[in-house]
Length: 430
Image (cartoon, rainbow, N blue to C red; front, top):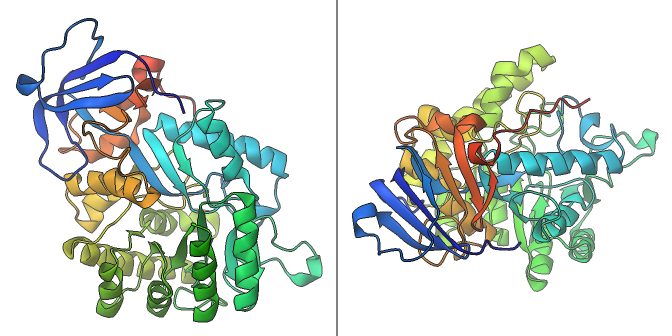
């Protein structure tokens, strides 16, 4: 992805630098050739000689580009299981994923980590984005996911003879786990996403307290992935599944829902990041009835929400690493609503806006392995920057509306925002 050339100055705004430090009023950001050279109080900024085109933040907020740390680019208005893997051909899913990538950037998400993708679509999307062929966030790809046979993601009945190969690789035992990882290595993935536990969505077979992989399978995944320089994460709701993942050497935990003190201690011992993805649960509770969601499933989502919020608070208070993002692309939790996760963490979970922004910027960059390049407004980092109309500290929900984004910079290039023509029309998938 090419950096911009030349100089740029952004001033007259409140700066949240992404590090968790207090906001800086009347701040100034200086950018040269796509890199940040100064970020701080305007009165302390170095003198700028020559041509420095200036962006007036108009009293709004200057902050780092957001990071969606659990992103499913190939999910598209999912309302039933077949919407995930059999409703559309791969060619059309690829086009939908390209739209979702563009939409994420327009929503201020300049970077994202895949939480799983149909086929290898996200691998190839990353290549196209990096070559500036299509717009989208800086990306870390995961490709297909790994699940135990009969586990949460194994729902197509055998009599249909259609398998699950487009969405997941099913395994039975450590040898098949190793083979699955090697397939994903060959596919070009960077993260290996697994399903150690079930979920509220499957109360009769693989609920949120059920284990869907053995410890031996999980350990085999980690050994093989780490041998090839890949990282491993997992959909972990059940407490025992969380602990199995941490003992097996997982590099991140998705959800971390029912976490006890022992699980927290294991998490903190290696500073393993967790992405709770909680707004999905709230959206399921609110909108589930209109989509025919059984009451048992809605009740389980409520249990997941309450326990997940408590786990997130435990991790934050203990100094652990939390990322923001999760499971957008469902009919009741659509792409484009990404920033609702941030509002939810402030208004429901109880995080401060500054802590939430850190989770959604620097922590997300850390999870991606890019904390030295993006995630905060610091000299030497890439100029992935948002300029937002309004005070995000006073009202974080302004990030939910793309119309409030004045500027979305990626490597110093103006990629979206009102100064780039305004937000795009929302798509209606069919």
